[in-house]
Image (cartoon, rainbow, N blue to C red; front, side):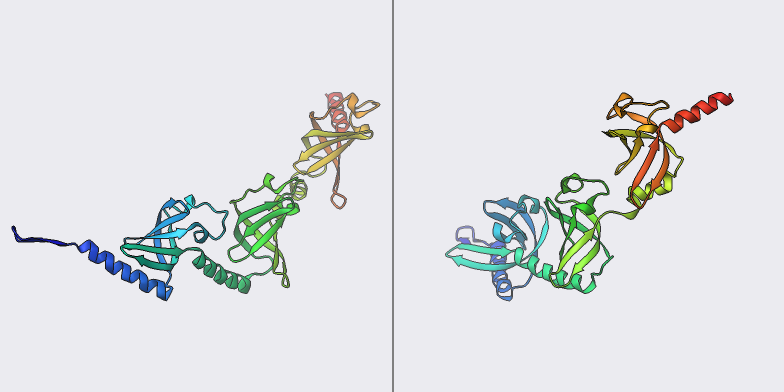
Amino acid sequence: MKTNDQEGTIMLSKRRVDAQKGWEELKEKAESQEVLSGKVTEAVKGGVIVLYNGSRIFIPASQATATREESLEDLVGQNVDFRLIEVSQNGRRRRAIGSIRSVLKEQRAAQREEFWKTCEVGKRYKGVVKSLTSYGAFVDLGGAFGMIHISELSWTHIKHPSEVVNVGDTVDVYIKDINEETKKISLGFKNAEDNPWEILKNEYPVGTVCDATVVGMTTFGAFAKILPGIDGLIHISQIADRRIEKPQDVLKVGDVVKVKITDIDFDKKRVSLSIRALLEDQGEDASEE
């Protein structure tokens, strides 16, 4: 670096030699298009900085993520794979630019090829919710995207997919259908064991006494919720042990009442409930006493 003739000493720099060697290596890596690994140290204006063997590599925002919607800040601290797309020098100024996206595209293509080799109807996957629409949720399965239709998200009626899932959620799904021509995948999300009608069949047979919440009124009776997704009808003749003109004479929406399940039609998805049957049972018990 410099000499001192009076003292007979010479200042040396190993760091500059290493930097020069590192720079020569970067130029070779750029020519070979080899995939490199480094750690994202910071997000800067217009991109991120990746540290590779002591060299700072600038990754433009357009080359940092698979999609433009993803946050650059989320990359900080992560180890990433990238390749060099430009290594240049102007005087003493050196510049190295890399791309994470090009590597991600290749990895995605390999994942896609592997996915289509092994996917089949009924196979289960863990996926990540990438976007929501009014009619469903799109899920990244790792190599392909599938859609969960809104009707598949819940056994109960929902108005929007966001009532069940959010972007970024990891979900367990299975393939319901594959359109080989369009490469569209329909996904199932609901589990059969969560079907309220199966729960009703197993846990609420005819004769069961349970609490029900009044959710609606008609001229011929009141509808009461037994389970989420299942409402039963308390016919006007079964609301009281006396004649009433209209259901509102005894009940109002929001009331929680004891009811007896008197009939279940699984084919037509109908449940008949009775308050009167319980009152009559209580009357018989009192008479016996």
